[in-house]
Amino acid sequence: MSVPAMLLHPRQHLVNSLRVPSPWLHCIQTSGQQSASRIPSAPLWIPSGHHCTKWMLLPGGPRRALCIQATLKDHTEGLSDKEQRFVDKLYMGLVSGQRACLAEAITLVESTHSRKKELAQVLLQRVLAHHREQERLNQGKPLTFRVGLSGPPGAGKSTFIEYFGKMLTERGHRLSVLAVDPSSCTSGGVGQSEFAVADMVDMFVLLLPPAGGDELQGIKRGIIEMADLVVITKSDGDLVVPARRIQAEYVSALKLLRSRSGVWRPKVIRISARSGEGVSEMWDTMREFQHVMLASGELTTKRQKQQKVWMWNLIQENILEHFKTHPTIQEQIPLMERKVLSGALSPGLAADLLLKAFRSKH
Image 1 (cartoon, helix red, strand yellow):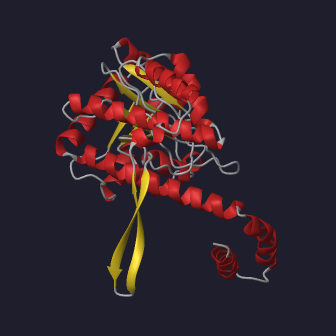
Image 2 (spheres, one colour):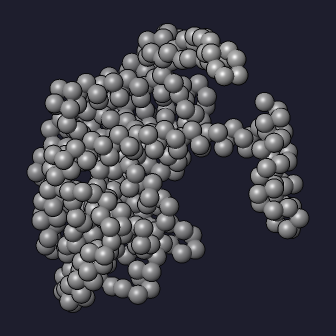
Image 3 (tube, helix red, strand yellow):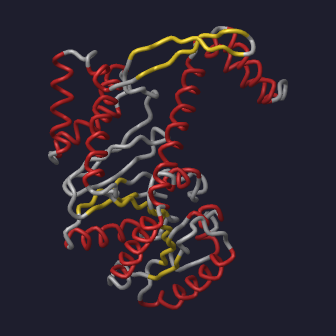
């Protein structure tokens, strides 16, 4: 199952690059004149700065605390002239909408080379600073609308995106689409990746084909609860009747589920990407959602919470990577895994032993 995400805004000029919580999950966005990027996980980076030491009087006696004051200026001072010119070129290209620079920037942020990761963070920090300034000029309102799309195989996601994208571009919008295929190789059902996508977008849309039973058994209740809009696709020809039936079933089901928003109740609509029926109305519903959420302040709060979630996800990922690549632990992991598989050790005890070994080496 692919998980496309689309972001758009009609007029503003902006590239807003974001961090995502896993190396294979893409963050997408769009703006008035350029699309954004997909950013893989990288070590948590504090923009830059100097270290200062201060002493704190605690019950157990005075202890030294490390405080980090970070500024972009300090960090960029560590770049060579060549690196600085490279970052400047990419930054100017991104904010002016040059696709070649966008492609080069994507390559940079996907690099696993440690120095290139640092350059990528400098670039991202400058882009984010530009983004904040553009939002300030826009009275603090978001310049992009991020939409996540999910659904089981056969829901018609690709066909929908093609029709929907053409419709939006004809109306003067700028659109960026990034698609990933995180399906389970065995079940093909909707899973953890969809929860990650929902944590990156303003609106989460679930596309469902006009059928039930085995075709929808992979849809988890949690995914439906996260949907801000449920769309029954392929509602044309002989499928109109089953599409209406499925729509009625989901309307009833959603009434029993707790709403995640205080101002928006998820809706269920029918569309046909082949004939175009309902697609324009779907866009109207999406814009209604954006307006209601923005006016209530929920959209701003949601984006703030997402930033915090992404930060901790990156910390967890990088701590785990540091743990697994530690020389001492690397040697012990295969042995511990074999003992867990054979039943000689419980998973909890094996984890405790590895953690103790890791702490003893620090």
